[in-house]
Image 1 (cartoon, rainbow, N blue to C red):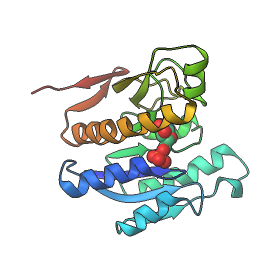
Image 2 (cartoon, helix red, strand yellow; image 1 turned 90 degrees about the vertical axis):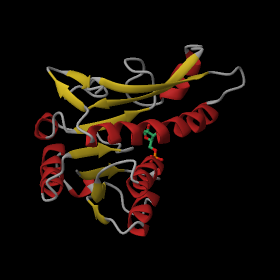
Image 3 (cartoon, rainbow, N blue to C red; image 1 turned 90 degrees about the horizontal axis):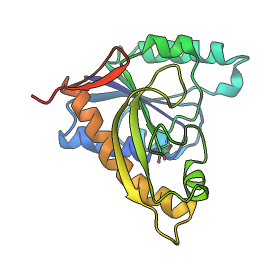
Image 4 (spheres, rainbow, N blue to C red; image 1 turned 45 degrees about the horizontal axis):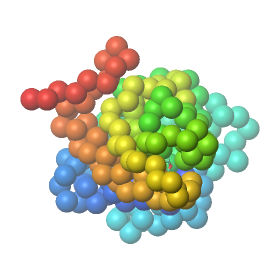
Length: 201
Ligand code: GRF
């Protein structure tokens, strides 16, 4: 399977997915990594792994539509089976999402449907939640609202801060995201009628 990964930052999830393609856990090839920001560590990680990189700076575009159109064009040159959002910090237009529906995954650091959007760790602390976690979901037009495929859950400790929660959740992310991509590449995971389907056989 051909994979394209979109990032905006350090790319530790990208690294976990690179490692899983190298070890053979994921039966797929990362054709390209695309970032909306230059000089992020994720781009270095991709280069070190010999993966083609693109930087598409959103600030050079007059509108979100125009940006997403170019982004889709770059992605489509790789004919990906799956587009992986790995810390890609941009809201996507409906037109863009429709092009990749059922073929695009995102990872979001909360137990969805709780805490869509930003600052999820602080919001979990403010709400005095005893559990917190991370979700991998198919991307639909609704921000962080598509069908959830897999979640990992951690206990919130009395001395936790947003930073310590983020750290422990990152460790979970690096396990579940490669796992979900593995399932997708095995054709065991599909989106049908707005639901995530898992084929157990
Ligand atoms: C992760 O916390 C992910 O859940 C969120 O963005 C962060 C990306 O981290 N969507 P990294 O760039 O993969 O290290």
